[in-house]
Amino acid sequence: MPRPLVPDRRERILDAAEALVLDSGFDAMSVAGVAARAGIGKGAVYLEFDSKRAILDALLQRGTERLRARTAAELPRLSDAYRAAVQALLEDQLMTAAFLDDRGTLGTHVGTVTDGRYHARHASVVEWLRALQAQGMLAADVDPEHLAIALSSATIGLLSAARLIGPFTPDQLAGGLDALARMAASFEP
Image (tube, rainbow, N blue to C red; front, side, top):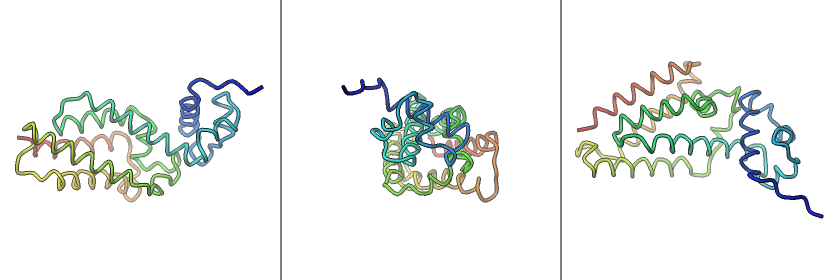
C-alpha cells in the first residue's frame, strides 16, 4: 500500500532546511538531516528536490519572494521601497546572510547561480522604474535602464564589499542600504 502524501511537504522541507542552514550552515546541512527535521523520509525530499544545492536555491528564491511581498505593499516611491526592503531584509536571517555574503551560512552558493534569474530580476526593476516614471514618481530625465544598472551595481557591490572589506554587521548593511535609499531619493521629483 503506498504511503500517504505529506501535506505541505515542500514547505516543510524548506522550513526544516532553513532552520538547519541558519543553525549550522549550508555545508553542514544534509538531505538526511533535512528529512529528519521535517519528519519525513529522505526519499520524500528527493521527490521535491534533486540535490542539497537545489534546496538552498529554493530557499533563496523563497526568501526573495518574502522580501518582494513585504515591500510590494509599501509606497511606490523609490526611496521608500529601498527603506522597506532594508527593513524586510534585516528581519529575514537567511536573506541577511545572503547580502552579507555569509559563507559560513550559505557556503559559495550565491556565486554559482547561472540560470538567468539575475537578468530577469534586473528587467523587472527596469519595468518598475518605468512604471514609477509614468506615475510621476521618478524624474522624467532619468533613464530607467541606467538607474537600474546603477542601483543593481550598488547592491551587488555590497555583496562584494562584505567579502573584500568586511565583514559587515547588520547595522552596517542597513546603513549602506539606507545611504542608497537617500541617493535614490535624489531621482524623485
